[in-house]
Length: 237
Image (tube, rainbow, N blue to C red; front, side, top):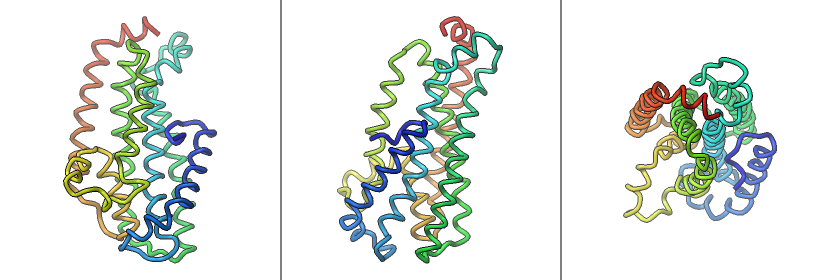
């Protein structure tokens, strides 16, 4: 899957992959979406989750390698390493806003209801991006000392994607496995997008609150690591 990076070429590949998913799975998965009916039901379900995932995965991947990728600037200019990846978060957020604009236009064209609950989308997106930034910063610090982190993150994101109900619907998962899948931090994010877009309902707050707690822990861990290792980071890169 080439939908995890941050370049324009990879985003184009992600769009092609989205089209393939729609063409291949629309009939199979569409029948399992009782919340909405019509020929576009699976398309709405897929795009609602995939737009958020692409932004998250792109931010995480690029933040993880930010210190290595920008080593030439860090050596020459006294940059704030902690704020360096913020440009990545901003650029991926802009792409998400533009993509969401096209998605909302699509929803209007197919007469899909848009309610006040859509105001949850910016809040959920902000939480997922802060999570991606906090996790990415921890991995970026470790990546200076363990250069295989880049490859590891790529593999983990591949598995993470398929462990998150984006392409498939959650109802096809055996009931014994569902509680375990809900421990996935991105499950609550994708479920929130689906709740807002498909059900015109507010997200389940418990999962999002748990993700906020995890994000806070990662942020504090990153700050602690950065405080202890900043000089070593500058020396090694």
